[in-house]
Image 1 (cartoon, one colour):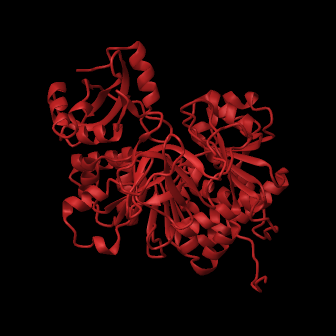
Image 2: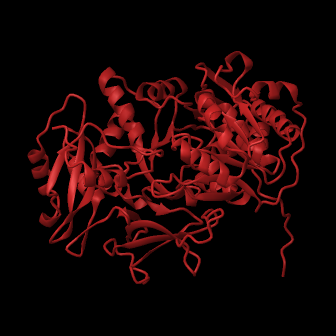
Image 3: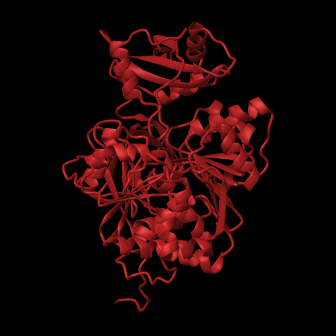
Length: 543
């Protein structure tokens, strides 16, 4: 028997329409690329978004067209999140931190027909435009007064388009399963792969983020994603915040510790999201200035696993509670969040801190399983290690134009490439990436555990453990570390520090102190680059 309920499509414009009607004066705040702070309410954001929707249609954008952005997290980018998707086109957020050749590759692979760019990238777009022959129009995301001289001479100006078009617009009927967004993986191992989101998957994901045991967003929150809007939809917060009427603060291009701390303080931010390197910068700034932040309640950390020492430092300096999260571009991106259960209240501090090192429990809608190398599902005992596989309504089932990629199982699961355990309470703990795991004498060594051990030393800022070839054991671990400003340490001292905290045979053969570690477009340490460098440059050390 069929039910007798209304069937209204889950589409992205409905989110901004809701926010404008029920939270018209709740603000979107951003640090513009031009410099000043910009702020407006959701009602004004909707008016401008509808003007842009009219402009897009006048430019010739058709349903299904890919409209690319090369832009930071700003109010104009926020408007495009709804204007492009709302007319049935697909928003392709291009990661500007990719190499120029990869930017050209993804634009051509996506068959981008239009490209919007921030001032920061005007010269780069002018240089690359002839290599992107499918792009019909370029739009500079600024006003005439700030249009740079190195912008493509035929570029349209965003604010001119806003001024020339009416705020009267009726959203077309859109199939909720129609594509809304396209985001490519960071491409650290070969060409990036495209993940094609739908209206339905994105709305469901945004709704799930607001659940009490997820982000628990409400109109009383001030949310600041320091994951940029070009990376997996800024972890879906530009959709999740207006869905509940939360204030949304966008950092623009300035992700240094001082700029982030200033915005947190001035806007009273309650909920932060970002990769560990962002919070290291904020903590360093607060250490140097003696400043304190009083509004922060929660810091969601993803992208790479923080060490125990870093979790403690972030909570001490920023004032909120750290919540680890796990996800990937392929999972929209959030799949897991570390929220304590009621029975954990009042437990020992050490037990609580150890639990914070786990990535968390699956959100409603996301199924998790651990499988062995032969495909057998592993028990949820917190000890059995295997490959993490996921499925759900906002998990990719294939890559865009990449039918041959073997990461989707015959029974409908996505193989993440992460090595992990699941415990009796459903908590996920990553032990490694499959491509990073060190296999010594046939046994796995967790690089994350080694990094956590060395980062508990007060002088260490960051660390990366990599496997290097060994004639007897196949591979042995080598640790590369950077030191905190003004700190000193001896490699042998650090090696002894690690040896006291891990199994004897896990102890790295060598610890090297380096000036910096290579960081990729999404804030992760590029271990593949380190392994390549070690093969040709044995003297990385600055010590």
